[in-house]
Image 1: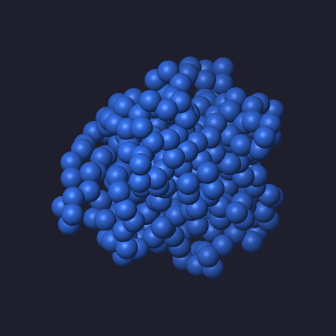
Image 2: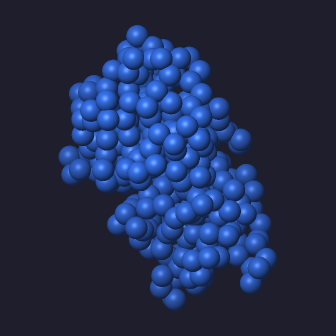
Length: 287
C-alpha cells in the first residue's frame, strides 16, 4: 500500500518556520493502530489524515473530506495548523477549485477557503472561564517561574489552561521562559489540563502591530512545545477579543520557529483564523 504524504509549514510564508504538519491522503480508512504508528513515525506535533468520503469524488474536485489528527502519542479532537496544512495540499498541490472545503472532524464541520495568499479556517470559538490560581499554583509556577501572573482562565471543552503574564512583561520575557515538560505533567496528572497557554498583551501601535503573543505547551499529548497552534487560538481569540474590545486581531506565537495568525471573531460564535502555508516535502509512504 502506498499513501501520498506531504509536509507543510503552516502559519508562515517561509520554509522551516511556522508549524510543520504531515498530511496523508487516504482513499479508505486505516486501522486505529496504523494511524498512530504513522503519526509516531512522522514525529511531528500532528499528522493529518484526509479521506475521500464520496467514492465519486477525488482530491482535485471534491469539496467534503474526512479529517483526523494524531500526535505521536494519541488522537486529538481539534488541530488548526494541520487543518491549514491539509487545505494547502488540496488548494496548492491538488489544484482543488472549490471556493470552500468542508472537513468532517471530531469537532464537527470545519471550513477552509482561500483569501489572497492566505487560507482562512472557519473554526468554533471557546470561551474560557475564570480559574482560581491557587488551584493550579504548582502548574503555573512550573510554567512561569517567579513571574506574578495577571490572569488565569480555563476552558473545560478544550482542556486548555490560559495563563496571562502581567502587562509589565514584554515579548522577550515570554520567550525566555523554559517550562519543563515533565514538571508540567507532574503538576497536573488528573487529566483536567491537556494544554497550557502562556499569553501576553502585545503592542498594536508597533510594527507589525501584534495584539497579543502566546506560547503553547502540550506534553500531555506528547508535544513539549507546539510551534504555532490554531486550536489554542480558538480560546485565545475569545479571551483577547473580550479584553481588548476588538473583533479583528493579529497574533504571534513566540516559539523558536514562530508564526503569525490573523483572527476575526464573528457574531455567530465562530472565529476565522487566517495564515499562510508552505509545502516543503512530498512523497509516498510504502506500507
